[in-house]
Length: 369
Ligand code: ADP
Image (tube, rainbow, N blue to C red):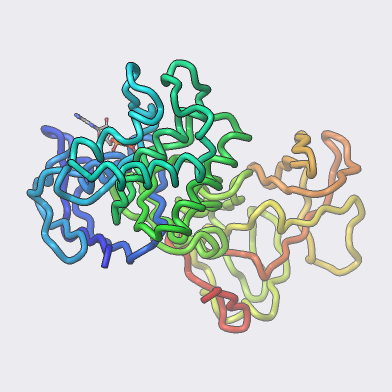
């Protein structure tokens, strides 16, 4: 059992409250990503789990045992840091095995574990080198190897890949997935990078200002965001969020324009209530020609077009606010008047005050279990 449980955890530095009060648990063998903007408290939480920061209030349990006051060395955890934290004067193999030797693990066992990680992380040819003779990617693999040989049940990673270029990041992530596949540790991984979270996590905790915004599978975080913050944070370009949207009879009212609301949504929302209405850029359709079907589109003006490689992002001005659509091949000019349609299965309505997602009618429900 490698479950991690935090109950009513609080953390402040002097007057500055970083975590007001937080509870969550991480299941055995989960790859949990703590995600959120810089300064939201991710590293503080990770360091509390590691024992590098004291816990002022609340209880931390690992494998059912209260470890709130247990020293880091006694917690059966391994940690990987962003800056690798390798000993510069030691060779790769000495760096990897240092902790084991300190803990008096028998020599044959040390050799066996070293052998395994050298192959697993493709480090055998570098075993006699010092860190300064290695590239950034190789150093990070050494730091992963050093954590892996500990055979710890809990693996903590603080922005482990952010010093690597995009290609190396992909291969390091794969190494990490291989390690997890083999050892099934419970992983807690801190990053501010949503792509990293989506590709690596089995579960994501999205934080903002020391509070959990959503705790769910990556699929649901993207497709069913809990609130406006989550909707905007995940996805690039971000979800379009239109403010002050109203439902009036069978129409969605956006500024001075209106669009017929699909049958599925009718009756689900209240009239004359203030909503935030969200739609992802890939769920907008743009045409040059007005549809013959009345009120099926709204008018917009093309502001500018960004080339994303496989797609283009078309920025549009609608009723004084900006929307972005991601499409394959735009044939519009800047300042051209166009017509947009929403794929309404993909609309999100958020409460105008609490900003919480109001869910969707059962007929549209596609929550993946
Ligand atoms: P994140 O990892 O999400 O970027 P951190 O957990 O590092 O955020 O920091 C959360 C907040 O706590 C920040 O506002 C940061 O300035 C503050 N903080 C972190 N460590 C200390 C410290 N040792 N002393 C005072 N404030 C700190």
